[in-house]
Image (tube, rainbow, N blue to C red):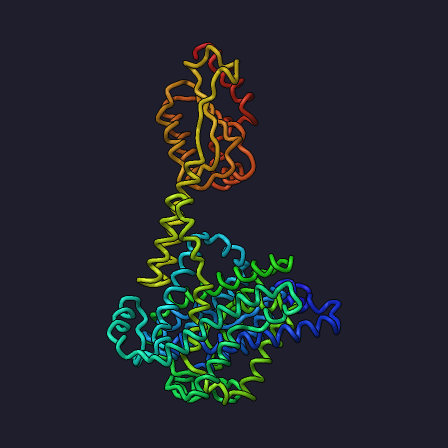
Length: 559
């Protein structure tokens, strides 16, 4: 493979963004990168802790995956790192299979993501129905909020279970252990987050609009930490639970894999890959709308694949495109992948220089931040709008939501996709129809209705609509049958087989079959399936020609 071909196959957006790059753009990217790094700091730690990992796992992921996704990705402004959508899945994998197998599942999902991009499957992610995406997003948001009640209230629970009913049971049994100080810190942090967000919105079009660029999560974290230190509040902190954050560079680690457990990782791996692809490409599409650009979905998937393959071996967790940090990047002036790389370097500097300070951060404040993130992550208005949609849409969204919450995200997505596929097949088959051709449309048929039947087909002739041909086959009782396929836009192998059966039936009934208007894709599939050979001598270019031939056949002596 020569260099031009290689860059076409694997061409990071960074290469194109550097064309015409100047000092002004660098200054904007530096400022945006530092801002996003500050925003990502508490989120990265919170996502890791909620996933059952140490806080540094989130930071290392934001550093390594964030740098690789920006450097190799297909979007100018997307920021990669740990995301709330992975919390439920990662927590379940760690609980059932252990940390070593989480590393294996994440690396395997990275390989799958890279292969998806390599085989140009990026655009296929867009075919996942909105109802499925909203259903599992809202379901994940509910589970995240439920999982944070422990730290929000300071409950004395050693480890939270992964499934919904066990969570409710454990929380109910330990409500009496609630820590009032932790609850007050969490509620104060939550109030500060909401208040800061509203204040920023009000000041957006004023000289004080810089306030909207300061992340509320940092403000909440700072005030909560100072309050706990100043008042000596008896709340659990990162230092008391995890011993703080090591002020070292991420180092390579080769875990002791348990292959007995690893063989059960196929579904978790597929879930991580599918969710990572959906999240990153949805995020990239939102970013495109904000900056008037278009990302390369296949390059983005390959970058996500590389990041998810490399990061777990350096103490990280699954990563994907993150909507909140990407929007912050855009609003802060980020205009190239350089800003995402600066965001990763900013986090690295924080880890190396200010890690000891993180030990004083209260877990209740991080839980409040995650509650806030989960609430904004969900699309709750969609539940109120359900009454405006048809039953299949409502059923799919609610089924995916409840299955995500009660059972498992993998099961929910599988059921959602199957339901959506069946609904789509039903709708497309209902759009396909047949109608008889009357002598009012074609006067040449007048007087020959007893000898000639003519039908016009519309839509797609696929496995869900072959009954149209079967019905015509059952109704055939005249010496000549004319079938107009001009308005058929698609025929699959089942449709071609149905036409083949019609030919055989007509031959047995001694009916002359004439096919009209076989063009484009239907003509192509007829050639590849062998149907065209059986139609030799039966084809006409259009319906008028087919009817003229039919009339000439019935007018012959002996007919």
